[in-house]
Length: 62
Image (cartoon, rainbow, N blue to C red; front, side, top):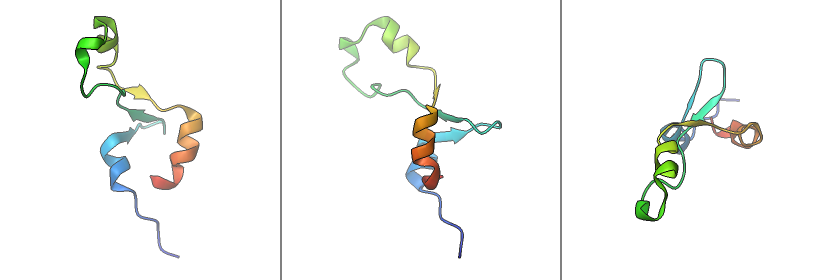
């Protein structure tokens, strides 16, 4: 059986680290920033790690 293709939508949104963890960008960043606090906007600049339960669901897409 041939290898499964990686979903291109996933490769645009996440990166797999050297230790196998999955990095992702924060949600709620695209618009309506004036309604969010400065703290929310500042803390959402950083990327975050995907939760292990989500990684389990997304394994087949990588």
